[in-house]
Image (cartoon, rainbow over all chains, first blue to last red; front, side, top):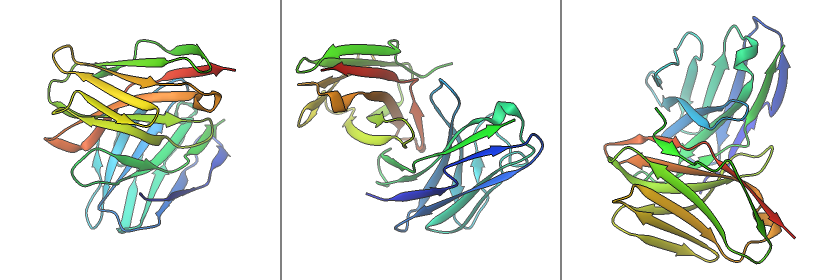
Length: 115
Length: 113
């Protein structure tokens, strides 16, 4: 298993600002992922963070809005840019525990509220 | 289009009884299924999984059943305990795209003492 830490755990942000969420894994992992959970909704995959290359974004998510960095095998950041109230969500970092299955380990999440 | 469905948003069960959480999927390419449990203010925690080559997997009080022909799986918790009260997410992935784990909307389970 992997222990995943996220910072900040929560924040209240003003419309139009940007916030960077940090994700630290206690072991080297090949694949890291960023999910969003909007109020009352399920987890939606934003992007796969690839070490040494550009992130791979899912339909409906773009790099300009959600730039991602993955400088090494234990760390990633997600920035939520030019925030609006619709971006109020829990943002979750995850890492794959097993290369050949879908098992993921999650951080505790970062709850963002945009006013 | 929701590929993983959990049609019951909530479920209440008496302590000691069986909890059955259901999940349906539409994508026939899915071949690995997972259940996650989520407490408020925490990230989801992996609970149990099943490969499409099996129809049952058991781990202590938790058993997952898979019916591929019906594209249906269920999670059984026996006996249910108050600490099991949480949101349960069904999730699925396909061998062709292990990058993506698709989550259902979740079922909120309340176990009543």
